[in-house]
Image 1 (spheres, rainbow, N blue to C red):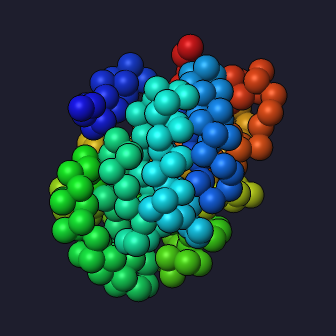
Image 2 (image 1 turned 45 degrees about the horizontal axis):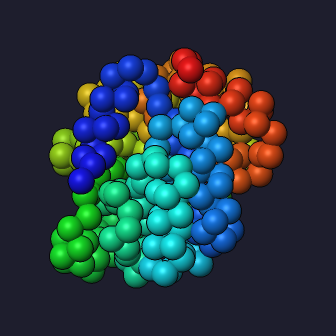
Length: 247
Ligand code: 1GP
């Protein structure tokens, strides 16, 4: 069985990695498999599977299977809630939306799901999920109190607290479809303050935005909407290349 954590850390030693996010509620499993294969050809390192609404254990399992069969890339389940679980994924972000105003998203949902996750034997990747303005749908559903783009000290405080709690990854999230991604100054300040890998996502859909996030210090760059909407192979390669800084 693949050890996804080690795979990610090994890849990150070589430089920033690219994570392609696919939402099982947005397309049929075969289409998700096709998109994952295209992402792999463009240089993506790993596939994240998840969405804020409409994900079920069934569409998650079917999507994870298609992605494995058609791309061969490892998968990480990026859960939208405690009801959806599958043993078809290679790993799951066991995550807390740490700047939520609702304990459900900070710890209660996790406490509900944890025994099932353990029983299924899914590899867990603990992650502190920090929502930055505008936050979009995940900010609304997760009842986040989004951190202002200019409040860098606050983002640093949340990230360091997650590290001190023993979490393995930090994710700075501007929200899917955000008009502006997480500011590079915030990425670099957080990166300098922690010694665990930093994932950045939300609103990244151009080579310039991907390059800015990489140069600011992101260890992993997530693109969701762009992967689902981009049908131009050249453009896909440009964004993934800009995220990784290498072929
Ligand atoms: C959302 O960070 C991810 O959780 C991806 O956002 O869809 O804007 O790429 P985009």
